[in-house]
Image 1: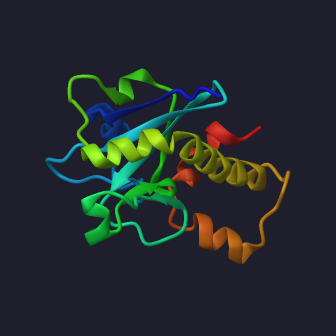
Image 2: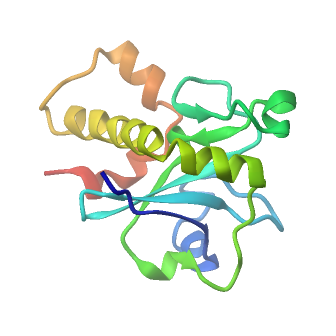
Image 3: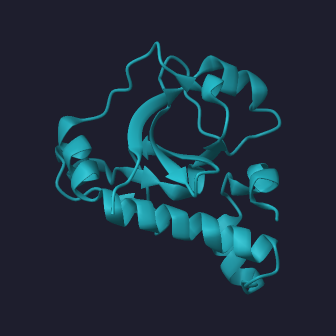
Length: 157
């Protein structure tokens, strides 16, 4: 199976449209690009998974072979993913930078990462639409600090 996945940064327009005061779970750092792996989700929109230095929960792909991962638990954080369907939110002027060894590990594990992030989003979508309801404690564990609730309109049937 072929996957459409690219590494990009989110544009300043995205952060203007999703201000921190209203969307506090969306990651942002001053003077640092939001480097993310962009994965197509069922031809509808893209899931933008951020690269993070410190990921200490199971809802992520944890790098294992990079130098950075050995010192600080780096990974791709599914819980802080954002959903986009507007090409203006992809910054084509800034080159997204990730560690070379993490880039290689991403590409080698792309089928696994794609499956895990789409499963994570689909479980939220199914719960939201009453298809498969999660126990409240399980929902709390998975989605209480997630960005997905900000994107209900993308996932509501």
